[in-house]
Amino acid sequence: MALLMFAPCAYAQKQVPAKTIRLSSVEVSGLQRITKEQTITASGLQVGQTIDVEMLDAAAQRLVSSGLFTNISYRLRGTTDKAIVTFEVEEPKGKGLPVVFDNFVWFTEGEIIDAVRRELPTFDGTALESSTVLGGITRALEQLLKERKIQGEVEYTPSADLSGGNAKHVFSVKGTNVKICAVRFPGTASVQESELAKHSKPLMASEYSQEFVSAFAFANLIPVYRERGHLRASFKQPSAKLGMEASESCKDEIVVTLPVDEGSAYSWDKAEWSGNDSYTAQELESALAMKPGELANGLKIDDGVRAVQKIHGKKGYLRARAKAEPIFDDANRRVAYRFSITEGPQFRMGTLKITGIHDDVALNLKHRWKLRGGGVYDDSYLEEFTKKDVSEVLDSAMREGKIRPGSRLKIDNSVNLNNQALTVDVQLNFKSAASPPASP
Image 1: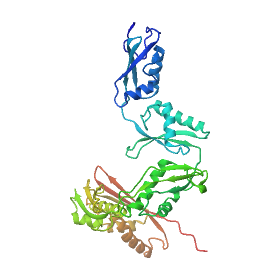
Image 2 (image 1 turned 180 degrees about the vertical axis):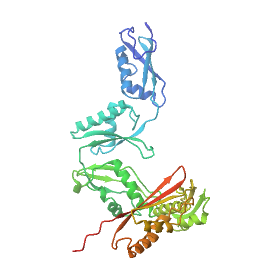
Image 3 (image 1 turned 60 degrees about the vertical axis):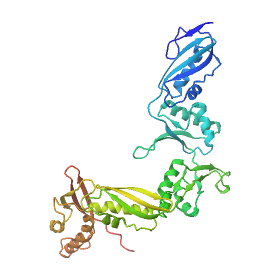
């Protein structure tokens, strides 16, 4: 009986005998997230099989190609009829991101997963940011399209929201031109499906994209529910079917199914405030304009939050923010909101510049401007000044002949914040506006 003992190496060392041995066990060290079973599957080795060095090298290469590891070596020990191979591996840093198959409407999710696993046996619905892994998924999808004789190009797009969160890998097919024909909304009760369909008209005849439909529902359909107090309404991941199987009237087009979980409709309970140094709770609640017991209209609440932030601008707090945290009482279907106010720095009036108009008119306007340099800036004052004072001064200037009667002037207002000096510079620029066409 021959004894085997080989030192760790990258794949195999040249002095290893080329004769075959029987594999009795496969061990793996260095694993963090990947399981031993996944590693063995990816290697292609099986306990009990007869192997040689070339087969071990090939197994190590498969592990490299899988994209699961950044470094791999192995060692072999035991006897010719009872050999143990140990892979020493190092996994990539970071975690796998969700993989989205955006518009592969010709296949079930199971068919897609099976196809990817033929290329990447350990695929679990996520993928590392590895060109090897992402390339393997792309090849699997291209082969799947080829098998079904579907013309199109597989495209990969990394995706994330504006803050960098919700990152994912998105794979789609370009060039198929498959349009949406109809959208179904299982789960509706408080809102009629016909109303959701009306709000979904922009989707009709557009190319199907799971990602786009999800984003559309969040931006356009969730507000329908929030307006009715369904503050926890949500839409599940959309699915799509193609052709007569889905609907006789939508042959060769897409019928989208967008399940909805409406949740409860809530009434307003109360608001709790913190960080409000410049306004009392009563003043903030007046701006919020929500009354106990009324429907918790999410759109009205949003308007109220904006109003709370806006009144802070009257006292120079142009960066003020109100962070809202809902507190749900599901037993009584009521909701309270906990508001945390961050006022930020207070801005003061800087300079006022008026251009594009007669000097006397500009001087008159400056005399009327009530915000003095160094005083607290009122963010609401410019609109008030433009509507009232500017209108009165221009009417007077026309009567005095300083502005040609019948002239149409347009005002371009600009407000520039100096974040270092914490001042606001205002400019009013008058321009001649085009006259409307004469009536026939």
